Image (cartoon, one colour):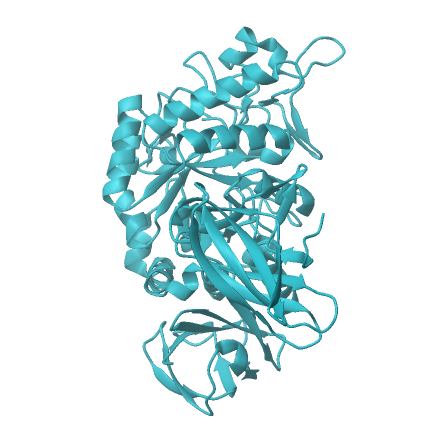
Length: 578
């Protein structure tokens, strides 16, 4: 029922499963609020947004302003002071002839997570490849947690703060895949890490080829000393050899002949993987997954990258993540859900802190602009994006030429459009060979074999993007504006080859201009929306954070970016003195 003064169309408000669920935030993040507020007649209204903590104690109230006459739309913002659960509501009042009437909205929950839920630079590597050795006879000796520890300093030097590991559990032998996804694995083939489980154990065990549980714990501690959090893969599926197959056969789908059905994602077939069926023993599966999560949390893991969550019931995740939050509110879950938007959004509303996105396939100016506005403004109340430039599964078409400028410009876009971005190992070496024309699989994919990379040699020869990546991550850490999602504004340019956008947090203002053409120089005039930037000036001084140069720009600035020079330049990332 509406109040005495109707307050409607409130934003942000996230309705899911018959109730309002929490708007996503982090501590000290400012949240914009708007609402339509009306009253009969011609009386004047005042309105405010008030924030309360979980104990129903008022934290703050801020005025809402009617931005334009005749719209009845009021806008303002509040700042979440700390981590935890809060709620906000909107109050309105009108006073005339010493008669006062008031109205009040419903309560809308807000949850402030720790910073890493919103802000992070992610790097993915396979521990078995780090420190791996190739013998003279061509056979490869697997890396271990001990040898992979030596790679941590290099990852940290590039400025990453999250290290994501594919599954580190024992790998099944039945129907094991060989190189390039062949069905006739040879004895020396290492198998796919996502085919989890054999006689050495399942999701609660360590692959003996990588070391022991103690070795894993030492690896996590060593990563922490380098400023890296380890993100673990949570893949709720098994190999045919997993202990669950014998102990809990009811957890799997059966064919008509009684055999267990392997996973399929047409046209792909995964003969080495069994999906889990949640219908026959939901409670048993939930309790087992909780046991597994609790185990790894006890080993120092506070971040989980969840494999294919969209192939499991959404209500399962909502219940599971709610339980984990009550026990360990610092634990973060990233959804690896490249699927339909409605499902991706539902997973965010169900409790996932972040999600993979469509950024990997957004390349044109209009696609990037449209998608950037969507994630920054349209869905930011319930969906936090993590922009990955590549993954072991995805070798995007635009990278397959191997043009270093394309690798550089995509890294600029991913690292400056959103607060969280990710990169899979080999990107900095411009790895780009495709398995087949028209496909996005890597040739000699690391999913099926151990990669031996010469990181040191590539650095000495200058055949690496690592220094540029390190610079991007340093810029991100130095500028609070790049650590926020909802502050993204696009600006007009006269060329479809050049995109321009800005981010501002307090007095920190960063402008970004990117040449989307990796092969040719492009020039255009950028029309900066000065009102959106929050200051007015005919000229303003800027410092390019990529090369240290200083320039004077104006509301209509001509820029030229040439990626083909000996020292190519694909972008301007500038700070503005205001």
